Amino acid sequence: MPALLTVEQVNKSFQGVRTLTDVTFSLESGQVLGLIGPNGAGKTTIFNVISGIYTADSGRIRLADVEITNRAPARIARLGVARTFQVARTFNDMTVDENLRMALVTARLSSAEERRRVDAMLDQVGLRGARDTYVSALPDGQKKLLEVARAILLDPKLLILDEPFAGVSAEVIEILIALIIRLAGTGIGCLVISHDIVSLPRLCEEVLVLVEGKVLTRGPVAEIRNDPRVVDAYLGA
Image 1 (cartoon, rainbow, N blue to C red):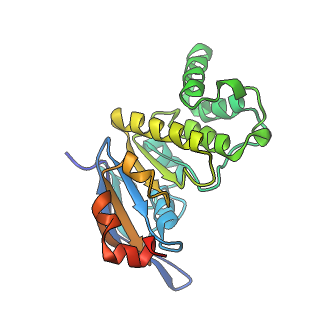
Image 2 (cartoon, rainbow, N blue to C red):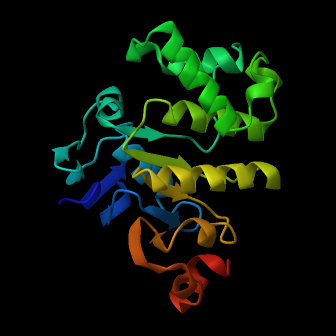
């Protein structure tokens, strides 16, 4: 049985500057893997390569047994990869309800099924009371919850989250942690970029450390926190 996500020797450069060098790792179904590293380490770049926003210069990426290297973002999304961004990308001139319905446009559901899914998702992320609120009026934390809700409405196989805990309240962090754990329990694989080393141990058993575009190490959170190389490169910064 192949891993859910396999990244093999991925390289990426911009104008001659290498940002990813032979990045290799895998992720199993139902696993939550943390991705940490200092600013400029290449964390968001590898997310962008996985999701098709950037093309890899070389290397391979597979979702289960399907090659997704350098496919179009829409195609990768249809195959089961959903993602969020460090700054939430929402339709601010629409309501929360309309944002969620937009995510379901391609699903061609009946009105009743669409309503059922939206209602269930609003309850999961605690936004039912904000259903008719325009997104422009939401605090940043609720915008992040909405973006995560949109990402998982179509039942992805892999969810990649870019700094979901940054700039949000403790209450939102608790909602996100519970949601990610619940998703992993259903078999969805989750890859999470975070600088929040306090929250990560509650989510995942392992973290992957990127430094200067290279995989420095991977292992249990407790070991990584005490690894002198990681302390020097990231945690002690």
